[in-house]
Amino acid sequence: MLPLASRHSKIMNQTEITIPTTMLGFEYNIELHSWSKKLHGFRVFTDGAREKLEGGLGLNLEFVSGNTDADSWMSEIPSNLLHATSVFPEHQYQMLWLAANLREAEQLLCSRPLLLALICEKHSLDNDAALALARLGQREILHALGLDCSKSALKFIDKLDLTYERESEMAHVVKQLDASFRRYRVFSHYLKVNLQALTLDQSYPFLTGTRLGKALVEQTHRQFRNLSAYLSDTLALGHAVGVLDPIRNIEILSSLEELVELHDRWVDEQLALRSGDAEPIDADIPYSKVLAETHGIVQIVDYQDLCHEAEAQKHCIRVYHNRIARGYIALFA
Image (cartoon, rainbow, N blue to C red; front, side):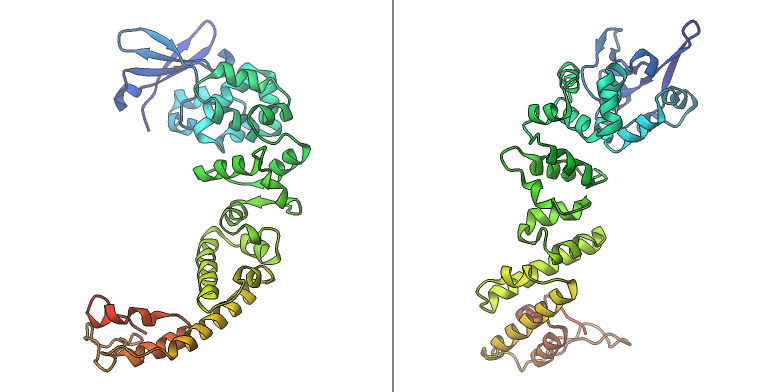
């Protein structure tokens, strides 16, 4: 966090803060006026020259908080607006600047802040263009951004349950609202649309709206990532065992438990298919011992042991035989 300089006007009782960006290698510091002075910003160069800041900062205002002067400066900004913009850290200052300079922008920030964030995403370096858009009605804003401007598009925005901590979240929303695509309509029966739902729709669109799809998106982000890998493996297994339409077999499932059952069944079928394959010529040669036996951890000692473990774990680990035989890796049960 950078230390801040401040300037107080005793007559007007205004506070300005200066972000010393010269410490980061820039040729200027950034001066920000208070909320009552419309949050106007300037680049102040080392030779004293001043240049109006025409866009956002690209950072959230927490970056400048942490001392008495900065906290005093921020305390003048309405707390509800600070909270609404904190979700969009990269655009926070510009969103607040728009709200400070235009009543319609403040109203938009209180009703559908995502629309103001989308304006700043489009015009992050042009406050005048951002102001012009913010003066429009909400559906007109969507139209001007090249997005679908129907009432159902606004309803979709209200369903979004996102943190916007990841850059991909905004990209997902823009793609869903694309005027020529209008993909968001597949979520018409969803009460909430979270990041998992958007990610699943991008990777496995055939699951959006299905019972299995809804079960998947109810998982935590970490669980969802693991299940996505599991789902990919299940599809690959379906193709490997010759299923005519593995996608159809998966999309009719109604629970995660049924997905596990299908996965395990296809693993068994693949193992059965491969059981007829010729054994490798070095199948009877024991693997090199790499560790002494430890309680609860036993090294897989040869090809037959590897096959037994593959059946027990329902995993095609037999493909690792050559690498194990050559001493590149070792597997343990």
